[in-house]
Structure formats: structure tokens, C-alpha cells
Length: 275
Image 1 (cartoon, rainbow, N blue to C red):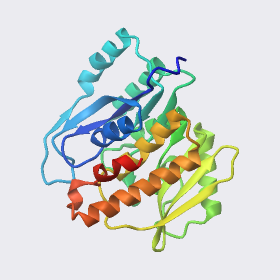
Image 2 (image 1 turned 90 degrees about the vertical axis):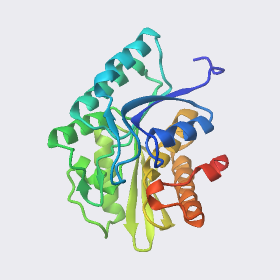
Image 3 (image 1 turned 120 degrees about the vertical axis):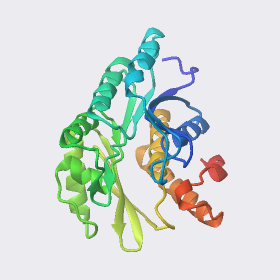
């Protein structure tokens, strides 16, 4: 590999014009971390679905032509990251994308966006959940929240009371599926919120921090984008998770200080220079 060549990540997610989520978060964050971010839009929205109404255009039917052109250009990527996928067909397309545009050196990051707070999003059929398991098996790094980790491992969900032993068992179950680096995010610990960091062959870690404000759209995209960029840049995984966790917390604090409406997502632009 030519070390002077700028590295590239293909980011597969929605393109949402307003509300700070998905590709609208990944593109500036990954770019700021000195990696070219190449978007693969699975759908286009005027604003995220947390608003009362929004324009939505499913891009599934146009993706084959979009990606065929990349194939004709003989493109390849140092990293591939996927976020929310809206159909079983899209999951299959991403599997083919990994085969066609990746290599043994490509870092594959899957954020299995399936639900939160114990609930799986309504469009996710059991077939789609099984498809996400296949996608996870192709990843080097995965960033599921507690709900998603439970669903992927067929573990009964509960909101609180998780022990280190239980989380370690769940992380090992995820590792057995394929990925060697796993962070289970958003684990309630009283007044704290925790991430459980597991890396094959290394000591697992709990990273805890105090909750900040209300939950906002885009924090998961922000977290996963930092993890993906660091993964491509060769940053140690534990260091990367600490960085991503701290940056998300700081962004939430700034959002509160500036009185940014919760629907407008997380205000990371003010502190992007800190990454």
C-alpha cells in the first residue's frame, strides 16, 4: 500500500438534510480526522424521522448503478462502515459491497442500528435481524447498544442490573460471530452510563461517565464515525472508545449550553477541532 495515499472510508447510511444524524455526521467527522469519506446513501431524507413530517426517498433501486460506477472505476477502500439499513435487500447489497470493494486490509465497522431501550424498530423483521447477524459476522469492529447486543445474541433484555460477567459473556458471544473488537454502548449504571469494551485477547474494560442531558439523535453515528476513522488510522481500540465516549459527552454538554433543541441533534461542530 502507498502510505502517501490518503485513506478512504466508504460510509453506508441515510443522507439526512436536517437534524444531524447518519451521513450528515459521518462526513464532517471522518473528513476532519484526515480520511476521505465516500458516502453511499441508502435513502435521502429532508430531516430525520423524529420530526412530525419529513420527505423520504428510498435510494435502494438506484444503488446498483451508483456502485457499478465505482466498480468500473476500480475503487477500493481502507475502511467500510455501515449504519441504519432499511431492508433485507439493502443488507444483502452491503454484503456484496464488502466482497467487491474490500480487501484483507480493509477495516469493516458495523453499527447494527436495530433499536434501543429494549425495542427493535418496527420495520426490522426477523429475517432482517438474521441478515444483520450475517453482516456483523463480516465486521472487524461492531458498536451495538445494549438492546442490539441482546438481540444479536438472543439474550433477554433488561434495562438495569447488568454485571461484568454477563456483559463479558455477551461480548464473547458476539466475538464468536466474527468481529474481534466490540463495544456495547449505552449500559445504564445508576447515574452513570457505561460502555463495555472487548477486544480479542485483551482485558475487557468498563468506561463509565455521568449522564448528560436528554438523549439526542446522531450520538451513535458520531461515536461510530470516530471508531471507524481511528480503526483505519491504527489507533488502539480502547483509546479510540475513550476518545469517542468523551467527545460525545462533550458534544452533549455544548448542545445543552447553547440551548440547541433536542430534535436538532448533537451540536458537535463547535468542538470538532478537539478531535
